Image 1 (tube, each protein chain N blue to C red):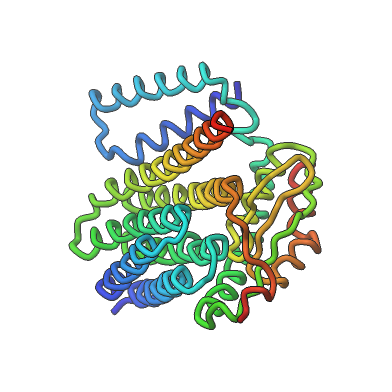
Image 2 (cartoon, chains in turn red, green, cyan; image 1 turned 90 degrees about the vertical axis):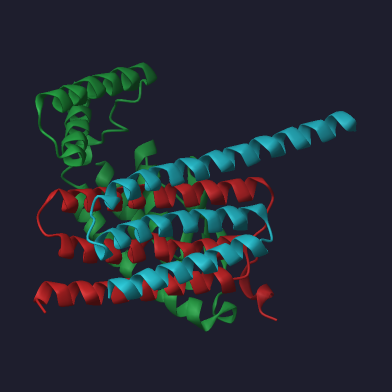
Length: 104
Length: 156
Length: 93
């Protein structure tokens, strides 16, 4: 097994763990705003790690360029859509739970 | 003019990178579609220093490198909270001052707040950003203003 | 390791779907749908490598863009519907 394959396996494992944590967070957190933070993990670092691992496997080619483009699209659209979602929820009058009030 | 040139360059790079075929027919299709997109963007009047922030080119990489370290740190924090469950979070919802002078500065600031998990910009106004944060630590860190100072540094 | 990642992605997509079913607000469902979409992009890319067919990346790229536009469109529709509801209520009153 080559070094870069090992490195990409490590990145894939770390990325999978982050994705799973994000999925767990989306299920467990109490309101829509805090769930958005959990979805944020999978959108930023989770996607980053998995696409980096695939870039290592791809080597220098057009495939590498396409992976970089997908990563750029995800990193640009992710925060934009979560801001749009947060703003729409706020405008529709969904109030965030704050502080210790949610700890029963 | 510089902005039009940079749009053209980016479009050409996207076409060449995605097609992978370099014969005359497909290259001419590329030229036609780039011309079409340029015409549409000029009609929409969106080719300016905001969509193509060329004056920031030299400063942005250093900022995003710093931001990436922040993203990793806050990711680890949110992962720990996700596994420990709802009792480990105490969400905050407050206004954070946004002293940036230009619209693009405020957008970069709000975007950076959104990119770091644990903080979410909900409403962006002229002089403040309404931020939802997963913990009081995250809110305190934003209010200490380091990120805001760095974005202001980009504007100069 | 690619197989493990594929299985994890499918599991996370199932978690997102269950959040979309449970709700409770419409925004939870859109959040879950958005998350499902970005995970699909990653799944298509990983499966392309798993089966040795990197052409799948083109599909993943298109999916990333369509997912974004779809979410923005859905949010617009909901804002529009709510505006209409509130204005019709004012007319009733």
